[in-house]
Amino acid sequence: MPPRPALNPDPATRAWVPAPAPAPRLLAMRGKLLPLAGLYLVQGLPYGLQSGLLPVLLRARGLSLTRVGLAKALYAPWLFKLVWAPLVDTRGSPRAWLTLSTAALGLVCGLLASHPPATAGQAGLPVTVAGLLLLLNLAAAVQDVALDMLAVRLLEPAELGPGNTVQVVAYKLGAVLAGGGLLALVPTLSWPLLFLLLAATYWLAAALTWVAPALRQLPTPLPSEHPRHTLHLGQDLLAVPGTLWTVGFVLTYKLGEQGTSALFPLLLLDCGISTPELGLWNGVGAVACSIAGSSLGGALLARRRQPLPLLKSALQFRLGGLACQTALLFHLDSPGASLAPSTVLRGEGWATGGRSLESWALLTSALPGAALLSLCLQHFLGGLVTTTTFTLMMRCSQLAPSALQATHYSLLATLELLGKLLMGTLAGALADSLGPRLCFFVFLALSAAPMLYLGLAPNTLA
Image 1 (cartoon, one colour):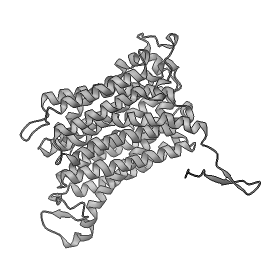
Image 2: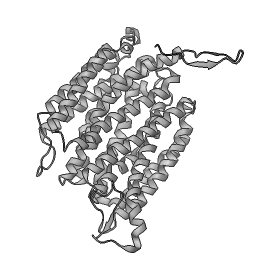
Image 3: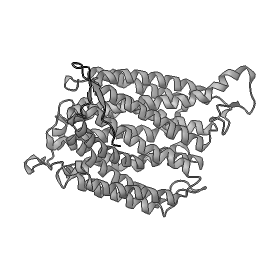
Image 4: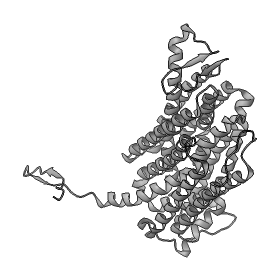
């Protein structure tokens, strides 16, 4: 029996008539967003691997916070995207660049399957593994330039909110699958099998990229539209309206948040939370909240909410959440305080010096849940802030000439990553030198600064 069409009441005749088909614009937007979602998902896998899995493995093997933070220097290729962005912008098609870079990611994962990570007693990652992870980041950075070029050219102004929601949500979903998911599977599956699964995922994504209809339809810029590669390219990029202000904002808006998100989970690990529990809450739970925040941001932007007022409200809420997390840190950092292993999932357990204190009964029973709730809250607000900021970045890049748009967006995305990478790398060293309490006060000040900077935003971005 064939399915019956959906019916709507006709106001004139009060009869039930077939509902209208989805608008062509909506169908066209879905055709753009689906391939973007798949590509951004696989792009998030390397980040999740190195931000969620490796730091916990290295810390569990006794490395200092400083050495764990310095491992993020492997993200270095992402800081040099402007070197190859003009080449991706003017040579070949987005489909070719995306296919080749995604296939290269699969090749590097296949090689990583034959090289185990650091074992107990090693000072850090083996040189071969570090080199392969560097190549993994290089391929992912090339893929990122091509994918951003595709998004900037493909999306209409009215599609920026949903498009950036798909970008951030899919990327974070890939990160949590490779971070929290791998961390939970490490005791069950071997390292080689995990990376062979990643390699197969990348090769499948490369094949689907080559045949995707949306990528076949994207026109290549005419030769006359190609940017001139001169020493004045940087000046041309900075001359785009709103660029200087946006550069300052993307460099600083994540400094405080990135520092706390890098340190707080490791401090929970030091207080006795087990690695599987931390992988579940900081990997799956927290990133799920981040995806929810990104989805909320996209929904608000799709309803014609302007990015700047939305950013102001989100940054205020984020500062309040960070203040609560700092208060929790003071309890975590008290002498002898610890979270007993394997109690967080059961909602149990604060211990002080191995003995229960009756006068602290209520407080100690609430602190583990409060610590985990603070992680989820910060990731939720961080997702909201990130989606709104990326929409603002793309709006600024669309003010550039068409032949400069991909390179312009790569500039903003590189500087956005630079701000996050800088604090993520130095957070451990700051905590070791200043102590966690003073370090978190610095993060509070860094989180308040972007709220003041928003008042200087140019009218071209409003």
